[in-house]
Amino acid sequence: MSTVAAAPRAYRETRGRWIGGVAAGLADHLGWPLGAVRAAFVVLTFLGGIGVVAYAAYWAVLPAREDDQSDTARLLAFAALVIGGFLIVPANPWMQIGLPLAVIALGATVVWTRVQPARRLRADGMQWTALLLGLLLVLLGIVGLAATGLELQSLLSAAAVGILLLVGVALIAMPWVVSLYRELTAERQERIRSQTRAELATQVHDSVLQTLTLIRRHADDPDRVVRLARAEERHLRSWLYEPTGDPSQTLAAALARAAARVEEDYPVTVEVVCVGDAALDESGRALVSATAEAVLNAAKHAGGQISVYAEAGDGIRVYVRDRGTGFDPDTVPPDRRGIAESIRGRMQRTGGGAQIRTSERGTEVSLWLPEA
Amino acid sequence: MIRLVIVDDHEMVRAGIRGGLPADIEVIGEAADVAGAVKVIANTEPDVVLLDVHLPGGNAAEVLRQCHGEYRFLALSVSDASEDVIGVVRLGARGYVTKDITADALASAIRQVADGDAVFSPRLAGFVLDAFTGAAAQTDDELDRLTARERDVMRLIARGYTYREAAEELYVSVKTVETHMSAVLRKLQLSNRRELARWAQGRGLD
Image 1 (cartoon, rainbow over the protein chains, first blue to last red):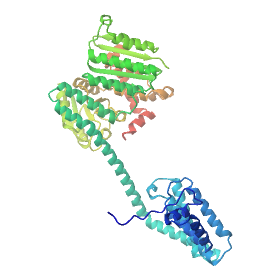
Image 2 (image 1 turned 180 degrees about the horizontal axis):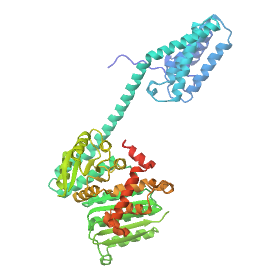
Image 3 (image 1 turned 45 degrees about the vertical axis):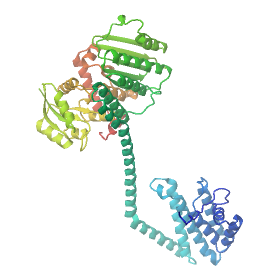
Image 4 (image 1 turned 60 degrees about the vertical axis):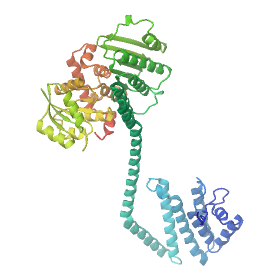
C-alpha cells in the first residue's frame, strides 16, 4: 500500500471561466476562494505586470480540464489585451521589464499549449502558425528585454542579432531534427506493419489453421477434404483480393456469395466474372435468386466447371454456363419447378426474361433485366 | 515440339506442372527467382516461358523487362487480382492463367502462346471489358476502343466459351477469333487508358 498520496493535478477550469480558467483552476486546486485568487492576479498585474506574466505562464503549464474549441481564440484575445494594456499604461521602470516578460510568457504559452509534440509530424497549418507566432512573440520579448532603454537603431540590430542567433541554432539543430523526423516516420511505418502482421496472423489462425486441423481429421474422406480446401481457398482469396461489398446491396458481391454457397455444397468450381456493378433493387434480387437456381442446377446435373458472367450497364445480363451433357427441356417433368418457376417465372415477373440453350456440349442459361 | 521454361518459386508447383504436360511440350529449363529466370531464358532460348507473377527478388515484371519482349510469356498466378493481370499483360505477356487451371487447359494455352496467339481467361476478358467500357465509346483513339466484334469475342470468352465455341457462335473461323484476340491484346498493351494505368500501378508494374 502506498503511503504517498498522488498530488492532485491542477487544471485550468474550462467551465465558468473568465479568461483562461487559470484563476478558477488554481482556486480549486489550492482550496482558496476564487475571488481571492482573481484579486491576487489583478493586484500583481499592477506590480510591474507580474500578474499577467504569471497568468500566461500558468496558462502554458496547466492542461485544460476539458478540451474546448474556444481556447485558442481566448488565448489570442488575452495576448492582445496584455500587449495593448502595456502599450497604453504610462511607462515606468517596472513596465520596461514586465512587458517583455509578458510577451515572452505569452509566446511560450502559445507554443506549449497549441503545438503538441505527437502531432508535430503532420502538416497541420494551425500548428505551424501557432509555432511561428509563439516564436515571434518570444523573440520580440527577448529583444525588448535586452533593449531596455536603447534607441530604435540599437533595437533593430538587437532584433537582427536575435534572428541570426535563431537561424544559427536552427542550422545546428537541423541534422538532429531531420534524424528525429526520420526515426519517427520509421517508427510509425513499423507500427503499421506490425498491425498488418497481427491482422494477418488472426486471419490465418481463424481460417487456415482451423481448416488444416479439419482436413487432418477427415483425411480418410477425400470428398470432404476437397470441399474444405476449396472453401478455405475461396475464403482466403476473397479476403486477399476481392473488394468487400455487401452481398445484400450489390450485384457482384451477391453473385459471389451465391456461387460460394453452391461450391460449398457441391464438388464444382464456379467462376464468377462481373463487368460493372449495380445496386440491387427488388428485381435485382430476383435476378440473383434466379442465377443461384441456375448455378445450382448446373452443379447438380453437370458438375465440373461452371462459368457465371454478369454485365451491368443498360440493364443487367447474366449467363450461367456449364459443360455437362445438356438436357431435353421437353422431358423435364412439369412438377420439377426449378426451371419453370424459379428461373423463368421469377424473371418474367421482373419485366426481364430467361432463355435456356442446351446441347450435348453443355447448357447456358441467360437472364436479363431491362434498365430500371 | 514446344520448348518450355517454367519460372516459379515453388518446387511443388513446378513439379505439378511438369507432371501434367503432354508429350509435345518439353520442359528445357526451370528457375525459382528473377535472376535465375533471366539466365535460364537467355541460355535455353525457349519457345514459351511460363512465368509466375510473384517471385522472390522482384516480380514477373522484372523478368519481362529484362528479357526485352524477345520471348513469348504466359503468366501464371494464384491470384486474379486485376492489377497483377493487367500489369504483366501490359509488359508483354501474351496471356494469363490461374494456377487452378486443368492440365489440359494449360497445355492448350501453352500451344496457343507458342503459335503467337493470345490467351485470355474469362477473368481477363472481364477485366478488358471493364477497362474499355464507358467513356471509351467517345474517344477517338483507336487504341482506346474495342470494335463491336472484339467486344462480342471478349463477352463470349468471359462467358466461358472456348475460341472454337466463340467462333461457332459468331459464324466466323477460329483464326478470325484469334485475330480479334491478338488485336485486343495489342490494345491492352499499348492503350494509355487511365483504368489500365491505374490497375498496373497497383503493383508498381507500370
